[in-house]
Length: 164
Image (cartoon, rainbow, N blue to C red; front, side, top):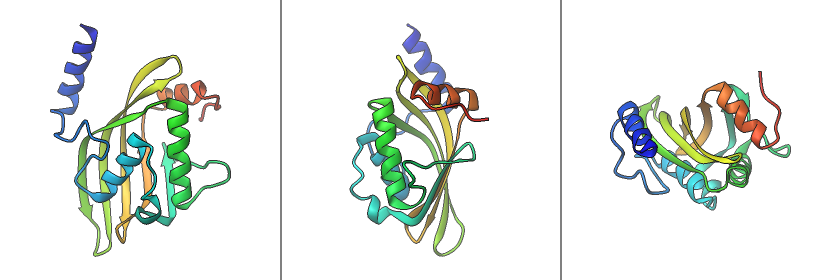
């Protein structure tokens, strides 16, 4: 009963499910599809071609880094691997995607999604929004935004200190 109610509330807030909601690669833009496929399947084999050398990632304004890696395709691969190790079998479900072409070579992609996974002892769903910047058909930057309280709870479950 609670699951049905939760599903109803999510559908009322986010709208109807996308036709590709159950697939690993979701979205219209190739960059969105590549990112969601990497997170949902753990397969990072196409990251070398789809992620720029200067790629940078931020969550709530904080720079993401792993083992001294803070740029490029290796950063995204490390973050995806770490996320999958920490959360188990994460699944991101895309709800909205809006693409704005900035110029001939640059696009900004706004996304809104629900991240599901095992954070600590329980399965959780976290609503997130983000902005992807694509330059020359490669992911150059990702900025994700979520509730800071939830974000710090998630950090605590994987042994990381809270952020301000």
